[in-house]
Length: 198
Length: 387
Ligand SMILES: [Zn+2]
Image (cartoon, rainbow over all chains, first blue to last red; front, side):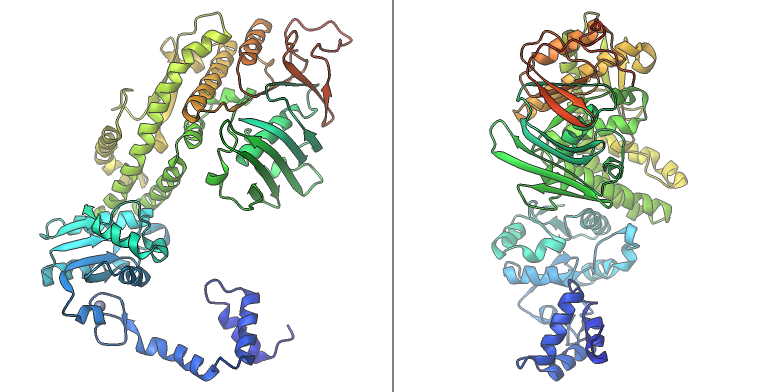
């Protein structure tokens, strides 16, 4: 290609992002090069500082730039009800619905032996420890409805069986997991209020 | 359901063919190797994106061509007109529905439902269990909403569980996959058992339509030694699978694969309570298979409230004259759309629409009376085929 080396370099980096192919990467790079609205220094430092400052919350696994995330620190939230999700984006979707006033536990994925993901690759031990240590009374399993999400729910439920905690699952008919972020607030709230013993 | 128009490009030996079939009974005749079977395969390809024969789709593209196209306008009993287009090129299939491209197979299926009987059906009796499971699965995909998705999920769960067994995962992890597999598997199992019961009920009248001899025929679903053929509710199916999974766990760990579930089941065709592959003559097997397809047709019609399109390929092979005639009579009595192929046109059926296939070209033959061939007409309604 005839692109200057610096432009080529940016295109190469942008192409690593999901959903960005050669054409979109070139368009974005040219836009960054010429647009008056884009401040390249601000953009670069925002990206660079992201990983320095944002890390998983040691309690729930969500992202935070504090020692603990705002949800885990919020005294007005019911600490004895935990909602277990696969990914941070699921937590964001549930928060947007506004229907849940407890706390969360982010597993970081779902069981998927074909991809080499077993229980140890997920924050499952941390969940059990947390349930026991903080006297959690109800665990709502909001892992995905794909087979991996179902298997994860079964696995977690069995571990919690003798831990003196109520285990529920979000109401059926509501897409979970990767689709959770596309579900509207009312549907999510219905799923939460319609949760059943698992 | 009817196929109103069909266009075929570069499909096997059909270079370019445009076809407006009758909405009732179509008979396509011609010598062997002229493209009769290809035409039925093309209809099947338009319906399901693949042939009914065991040919990989790449082998369907005409030699020398790069792209095969089958398109057609179809109409269901209540629903609207649909426009289907299925192509295959360079290892890639594309299904189009009403001008929307890359339609997933589960959305594409069911806009035209076909039932096929061809000489390859013999494999249903003689071949491996996989073919019989696929036979049941296909009917269920076409008649039960959600069955396809359950099947896909089952296979995914099965692969994951097998991987756990291969990598010696903890028992707790394996059992969480067992649970998922049992739930999905019990739905498949209950659906299949119910289907076999329906097919069995339809089989008796179907047999009576096509043969004078009494063929005491039954179909039995086989789901392991501890299942004795009774009907199961989904809950009962679940406890059967749960029992089997517990009992077989030790062997699973040793053999590193899942040893329970509907992916291992079979269907037994029994004649006088012995296996049809042993107890039935070749002719009886053929009658049995045609009856099975008639039963399949009836079940699909009842469950979907719509007659499927019936494709009968090369009826004359393996079937003697009187049997072939009875089949033709039975099929012309059906109300749906039918396509029959043979080496010679069927005699004496006024409502038959005749088409002649020669060198991949299809010509409508005006008169229902067959043109006299040089030799004396075969006593069979359809001449004998050498294939
Ligand atoms: Zn937190």
